[in-house]
Image (cartoon, rainbow, N blue to C red; front, top):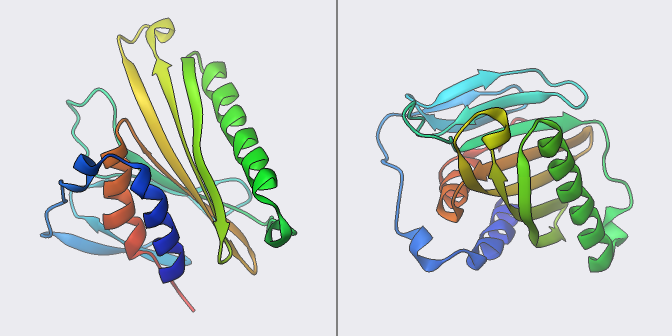
Length: 194
């Protein structure tokens, strides 16, 4: 897990330096049991639990949730029995192609919900030590849904491959520092049970 976190931190070097300046307060942290793993959260964060089932969300969390915000940073985890067989031998071109397929699929799903999506970009993709990390950006416009909101969307997906499948963690924010906050203060605290 420490190697995975180190790889992710290297990826985050792409973020602007100012993103590292803000930290989450250290008080009121609690450890939450999410089935196969635990994660630390602030006791006022919003958490919705799901179940470990094929393609289903195990949880979705809203760190620092404020009902007055137009958009909300969030982190979720889905599980699939797919162990991404053969990824160990994948070339960087293969990894980039997979990451682009992920981005294209997310754009298609977002557009199908009625949002306009522009300027989508794959920012980085890397596989190391049994994990795949994909980082991308897009601009979303909710006007067609009757919501006066145009926002940037940054998302990092971390695929943790285990013997029984793959856990896909998605860290989403309207800013790079929002993704960094989730990475450093939430994802970094995940502990899988033996």
